[in-house]
Image 1 (cartoon, rainbow, N blue to C red):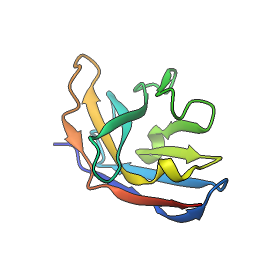
Image 2 (image 1 turned 45 degrees about the vertical axis):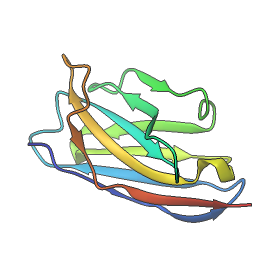
Image 3 (image 1 turned 90 degrees about the vertical axis):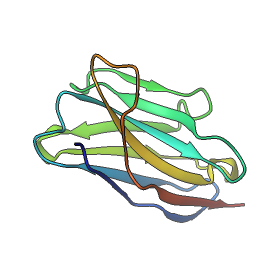
Length: 119
């Protein structure tokens, strides 16, 4: 069982920055790929980005590419989402997720953290 806890959400003005963190339970952080998803009001949850278990590969949705950056510190069992140049359309609940490296299914989810971008 992987336990994930997000933090760092809040209210920010358009053009600002936020950094989200996702802390994972010890001994389960590797070898899991980690991802960020988001769900805006009235919309389905969507993929924002992901990072491989080693941290060597990252993937981003076109909507956040060039503005968001994912990293992880395996020594701290923590993944980060650095969000820059935020737009009102980035407003959503952000979730972190984990899956085993040999799976295509995101099996584990955090409770989510709210990010609100004001115009």
